[in-house]
Length: 166
Image 1 (cartoon, rainbow, N blue to C red):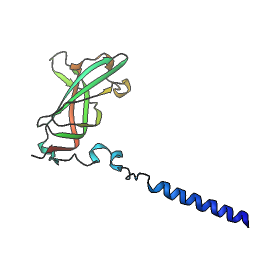
Image 2 (cartoon, rainbow, N blue to C red):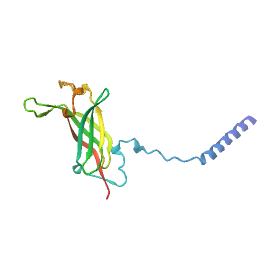
Image 3 (cartoon, helix red, strand yellow):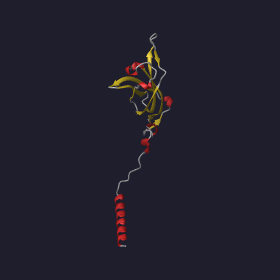
Image 4 (cartoon, rainbow, N blue to C red):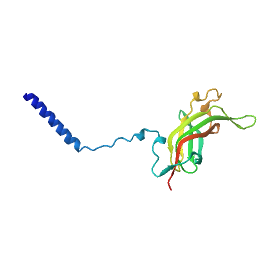
């Protein structure tokens, strides 16, 4: 019986000590789950409003370069009005000059590149992707030896855009 009372007193002491210890412990707010969402599903920054898609004018320039053993194409993306833009989808493709006419001919194969980063207000977003031979079956050209002039690029769409509230 004495052992049972001793165990009960120890348990009560531990419970009291725990409640006193946790009473002064800092309370942490629940984690913001929106940080786990893609950027275009997170709330817009404060002081901004959405912009209709037809008002957005995205420009993209492509550059072909090598970084050591890495063969890549680099995209420089900006928006004419300085809008913020999220989730930009690009298509890029190989193109070649017709030997007879000298005109550029676009290959029918398109490669999609989805830009998960945010194009911030009044900035140029620079992103890249690695060129891989399997992405270009049947071209009859070694894509690793191409130049900037050999590539075309276009914006397909984007997830959302915003402007600052005036």
